Image 1 (cartoon, helix red, strand yellow):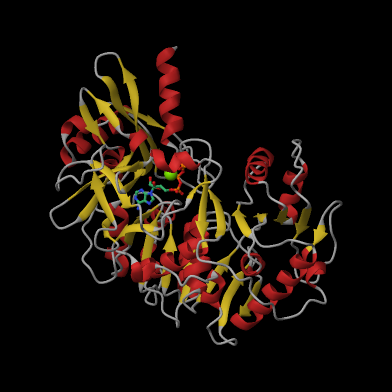
Image 2 (spheres, rainbow, N blue to C red):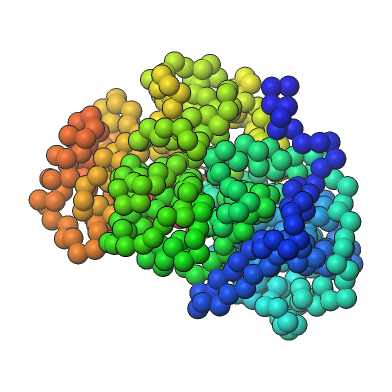
Length: 530
Ligand code: ATP
Ligand code: MG
């Protein structure tokens, strides 16, 4: 098989990746919103997980049972994931920002037997009105030492009491389900993506050359539990590399982030384009000492050139973009040491792993826009969409799984992102990727964030409309619109310029912070219909 180096041993449990490090090594450092601090070693983290696994087993939960976990950025989140996986349970990672209707959808669709939650979320679970006949246990995690519990809930600390520090990991196969991850829902209802233990084996090895984590590093991967990206980086890649992870509970604030990067001597940073963008556009980026920061990567959305330039200018640091999906892992990226081409996402993570194909599944030559695709045999590709086995098949073209995103390759094998298939704008017969327009607009000093979408037009079918958030203190005038339009025409092919620009204070985003162009597009359609 082509991808044999990424195929896990037949009997394999992903938690084995975290059990080979010195027990005394600090695994996680936690920092609370108000400066509270805590840390835990690999040895103690595993003991905690083992006690919890013992407690969960005593409740009667067993291999294959599904557990929805909705716990914020805390050390206990790591212990819970480890415990469930050691026991062979299937985790449904869920953000603490989900509301009753989102939780209900996931609980019912997955037929979860237990939910492990946090005091701030139990209320949302209790608000669910639908019948949940499969749901037998509601468990609430609390601060260490707190044994209280809300009515109808079991306290997780109490569950761990008296349990053994050791626990024999369930005998799982590489094909056993480990994670049932619902997608971000950027374009529609979330889909339940089934990942196996073997997926994690492949993920760890494929992404290693992108993240470049060393055991001696303190790593800050900012994703929150509940998103697949949390499993990718803070959970699997940090603990699977024997490094120390920073867990920060506070909210995003650019200056605070820069301070933490400096004070905690972060060596590897993994965050979203939005976070980088706001740091780059906040005044005083050069006031921080980021000399320890060796590796900085971005994923989840397109990364703008301007952001890369700002960090280069002030810190001689090149942020490396990476592209992936909940359905697989990182497929395309800029590996450490290989030259970054501004505006491109990087290259296939390995020969033949990601490619660009036409709608029939035939690879297209460089320069032609097509579908980003991945080989169906890749061990890091999901097994199926839960309870919807045909859906994966619908995305297969011959040997390839079609991601739904559009891009073109250049002669050297770099991928240039065009946009999500649905976000592509067709105007007067021209196909325009929103990202190119946004990229050009971002070069304008007045622009903080922007999104380009199709707006219905009687003559052209659609025109490009840009929604722009201005930097603090800038006033949105007609002159500014004219200036932006003429500058965009200089920076990109003139037919791509936004014929309409609207200033807004915010862009619609998913809970994970991705721009929801679909909302703006729908809004334009509704307005046109009026
Ligand atoms: P849904 O499938 O429910 O609509 P989603 O696609 O946003 O949600 P994810 O799997 O979290 O859910 O996100 C993967 C998508 O994010 C990719 O298909 C792509 O559109 C976008 N993406 C990820 N990384 C990058 C990147 N580096 N550059 C551009 N786009 C990216
Ligand atoms: Mg998707």
